[in-house]
Amino acid sequence: MAKILDKRRQRARAWAQRLLGFAVLGAALYLVHRLVAEVGWHEITERLAEARLPWVALVVACLFAQLGAWAARQRLSVRRITSTPPAWTLFLALVATAAANFLLPFARLLGGLLRARFMSRSSSPKNPKRLYYGAVLFDQAVHLLVMGTLTLLGLVIGAVELGRPFAAGGMIVVFAALAAGGALWIRRQTGATGGGLVRFLERRTAEREGIVGRFLASSETAAKIFFRLAADGGLWRRTGALGLGVFVFVAGAQWLTFYALGLTVNPLWVLTTVSVGLSAGVLLGTPGGLGTTEATMIALYHAFGIGTVDAASAVLLFRGLQFAVVLGTGLPSMLALELYAVAVRRRIEVRAEPEEAIGAVAPAEPIEPVEKASG
Image 1 (cartoon, rainbow, N blue to C red):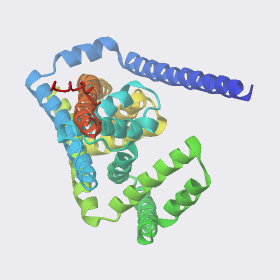
Image 2 (cartoon, helix red, strand yellow):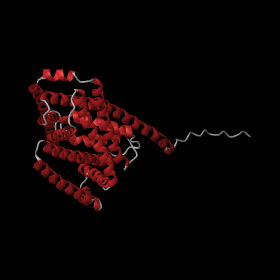
Image 3 (cartoon, one colour):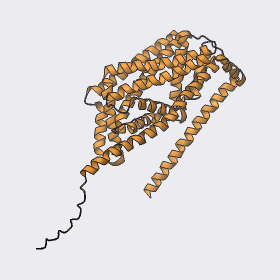
Image 4 (cartoon, helix red, strand yellow):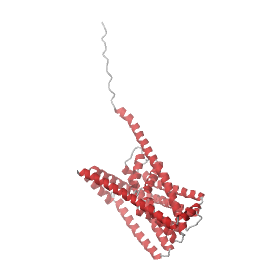
């Protein structure tokens, strides 16, 4: 009876999460509609028709380059722990996960697990998912560090541009305190044998069995790999540089979007708006930042003195191309990864068959009776 009640509770919780997700997605779409309706659909459509296609193509190229730099950053951490899967599957796993984040509300909470799953299924010989999850966690930490730094830098620049120097100074102090605290925590975790978090997981793993025990064991392995990678200063520098390249390509794509519409915008305004807008989308949890990112970016551009129609047109064109690139690349990547995983599994099974055949004992053939020779 208790098991039946648990299953019913799990189903109810799953449906509640789905309904909440669809509600968030509907609210985001409504926000975009209201935002554009206030500016004027007709005006924005006319403005978008003026976009010069060669520059739009260059925007798309920047967005693809951003995904390539991101995959190269993930590859650095994965190659520190294993030589599989191939580099092209790492790229496909990244864009497939990005597509899931752009489609599903709150998919960011499970995006790391999904990326690790794609990598594990594509590895030959097959490695456990928890091995890759530690590298994915490190990549996500680098991403958060770079984006957090750039967001604060954008806020400081924005405060200075809008004539708020004291606010800019306060933000610098807050950032310095957060950076010092984060560095101290990482140092403590990596300085001892795995740190307090890993020792806690080790104790809990030894105490628990079954599903909970396996989950804790996977978490322990992922944490050990994460802190091992985090102790590598050279890896931080290289992945941080690639993370900066990821943002440069994104901000460059937004600047080129304005240029495609015949506008030349201050690059500092673009840096501020893109960093703050993308961070707002992540914090509020809508799929791909839909609605929240666009609203934040248009409001910031308007505060910098750009016309509402121009700001809305450039932001919607940029975000539309971003969704098109990620979904147009990510959805086929999901299918390609599933097919490749099936091929890898079959290849492993074929290799195992000869070994089984060698180890097997062939049945003895019946011995025919020998007739005695007649004397």
